[in-house]
Length: 195
Image 1 (cartoon, rainbow, N blue to C red):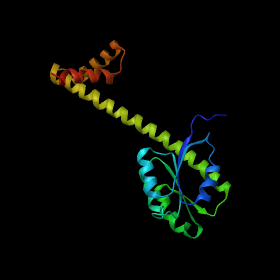
Image 2: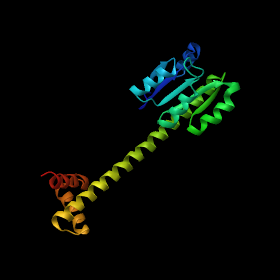
Image 3: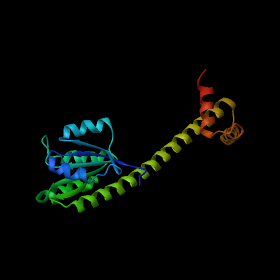
Image 4: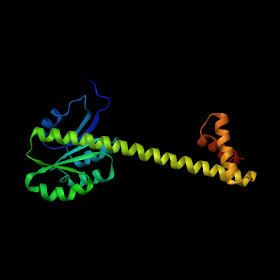
């Protein structure tokens, strides 16, 4: 069965064995594209090119440990980040990383634990996408309200209407032209601000 959505993945790992095992747990019908880089510098460049849904960082890395990169990415993006660390470092690193939404996994680990972590990351990413859609919708509504209010102010200033009259005029124009109040407001703003 073909899924409607696949998760883009960035793996940051200098350990070829870890990378091979991990990529075997990422079926292309669920995770695609999967990009593998060997150091933090390459990972930062990859993220400049395009965002990823899931980022998996296997520490240590040649240019730095990778913890700060995971924390920065977890804090500053909508990506879901997993940080794989040696068992003896787990408690210390997890206490730092969890405040930034980074999932920390102790290694060595099992395939089952990695699969479960991936499913948790997918569920988290879905939730983040839904929250982002709501935020975008809210922001668009706020822009629409500001635009309509600006148009009302122009009608008040230029035609001597009251706020209520300006509002009713915009609503009537929207109904008459079968368009949105925002589209009408844009036309009014264009008419009164462009000589």
